[in-house]
Amino acid sequence: MNIVILQGSPRANGNTAWMAEEYRKAAEAAGHNVALVDVAHKKIAGCLACEYCHGKGNGACIQKDDMQEIYPLLAEAEVLVLAAPIYYFTLSAQIQAPIQRIYNMNKPGRLKKTALLASSYSPGVYDGAIGEYRGIIGYWGVEDTGVVTAKIDEQKTEATRAKILDLVKKL
Image (cartoon, rainbow, N blue to C red; front, side):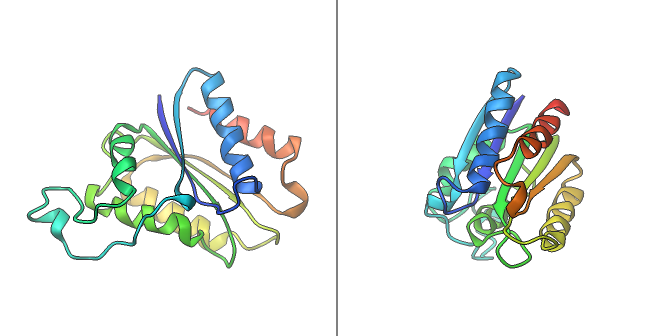
């Protein structure tokens, strides 16, 4: 399967990046084609709500930023994994912009399955992010393969790695 992982943490070696990398390694070992995109270090603006994409743009966004590199990957993705730190009860700002910019596609073309990887130093802060994630995939009508969260004492552990491997087994 073609898998796109959008990694939305500004910490290159942080906990969320580790989770995304573990997913990538497991999926590639299982024979899947994986593109891991560090969206936190891309120049991606938020949606302008200009509706160019649904009019003159015929599905193309008017903004010409780093999102242009991601659209072709999303068009071929059968699986989309969102990896985000939870700073204040929701997905990080760095991953919000690419999520909002998918608006021009309505839904990534071949998408069938999704997963969410989320980390935070605090327990009990995931409900908002998980609610948003489930709302998006419900709108898209795709299968949720699962959510893995990791609070401070669960980060970069074998137990968390095992949960990530279980997600990959659902592909």
